Amino acid sequence: MNTGLPLRKPDRNRPEPLWHQTEKALRDMILRGDWQDGDQLPNETRLTDLLGVSRITLRHALRRLEESGFLRREHGRGTFVRRSTIVAGIRGLTSFTQEMAILGEEVGTLGTRASETAADDDVAEALQIEVGAPVIVLRRIRLANGNPLGVQTAFLPTERVPGFLPVTGELPSLYALLKERWGIVPHRADELYRVGTVTAEDAADLAVPAGSPAFEVRRITSDDQGVFEYVRSTMRADRYEIRSKLFY
Image (cartoon, rainbow, N blue to C red):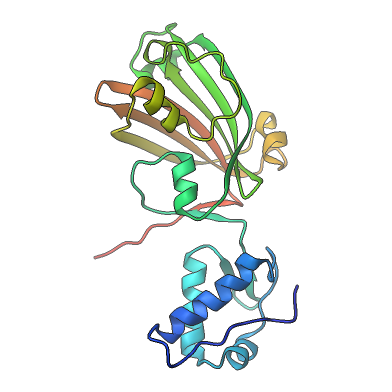
């Protein structure tokens, strides 16, 4: 951990609230890599001295950074950097690439595999097609900041995407390709999240042991002509969170 602590003290003459300036100073330390994933922050007394702010101001900034997924606070132990965790919340209908961009993450794709097969019962029901109808299968390892985050397998009715195969190179955004080549624009998606574990097949790709906690995600996406995509995803639970704000 960098002990030089090049923290920028909040300026009381600036119009931004002190808690906002404090939050930014701490976040900049994390984004610059001065504090690495898993590093423990100095205690509150040390931080208030370094920043010249009150404990109330500091705690407000720390709470916001925790809510944003930059920190984790463990009772009795302290506050730790958790930069590697992606925190997703309520969002519009976006692709994985768009979602990561909104969250400020560098997205990547590794090991794209595309093929054609006959739809089984599960795929046929999700896509609202006949069992045995041809579908494109697109399996991709999704990266965030260069690290494996999830494995996604997308199924597309072949008749909706004629000429899809062979796929050459990586596909940074499937939705961008679908819009450009076939005029397919998503209008609605239904997602289901379940708690599960990483299979032996996915373990090596996700760089975790088989049986590790994971989110199992099922997504069915439609455009104005009907369902065009069914996606099964396995997301590493140690790197991906879902958080919602509830109001009364």
